[in-house]
Image 1: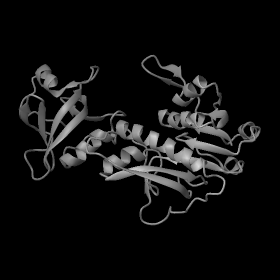
Image 2: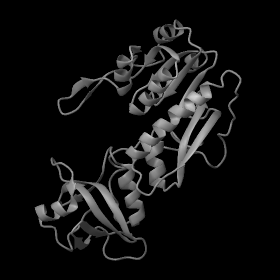
Image 3: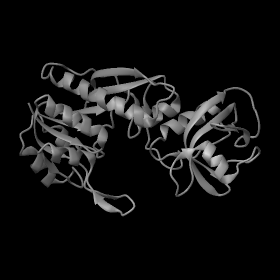
Image 4: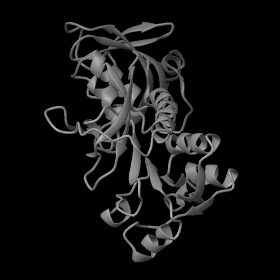
Length: 309
């Protein structure tokens, strides 16, 4: 089976390596153009490009897949299927129909719940008890195609977006290899309609702002969902503070004005929420490295009654 692979971040690289290790021929990897990143704003390749180069596979980085030149470049490979994993661009109908086996996508949710860009973060934020991966036949709609297979896992109480990302990347790669081993011949099943449809819109800094008026559980989920990017944040005396690790202490009742420090402890300080309270364990001041909240308390002489907003 001849495969064209399209992907961009580290999540995609896991599937790319799995395909190579399984012996599939991949003449071409398509990934996003290099972007400026880091403090020096240097041009940086995607994780998939770095992986492809290390594996000796040719890479192609079109700005858009809609160009006729891109269609011709892809068509020349005479591939049987295109595997798409977190590529970051819409695949047009002209390309979807090129391959005898179509385009197959690895998606990090239990479709039709959490279609879209940020399924991992949204599942944690929503308090979902489980998530997983789906191997899907792509069509023109956003994550709307019929599903070949799904694998489910529980979301643990201490899962962050990073830990769940890494688990699902491995799970998705294994499910992809299993699905490909049964093609052609295995038909996907349409299960994408009904009340379970939910969209996972891309998260941004506005999503990451802590609202202390909600419950301690909701804030804890937000902190975990925004770890490592972009990081949940709050404000203290006009400085933006990032919160990286928390512990739910109380889940019911009001223990003080939301956002106010109500207790100091050796391993952290406690903040009142709209319902319950939250112990802050790991924190980060502007321009500083992450630190324990105990270090933060000493550095700024935090007191009971101080308020985060």
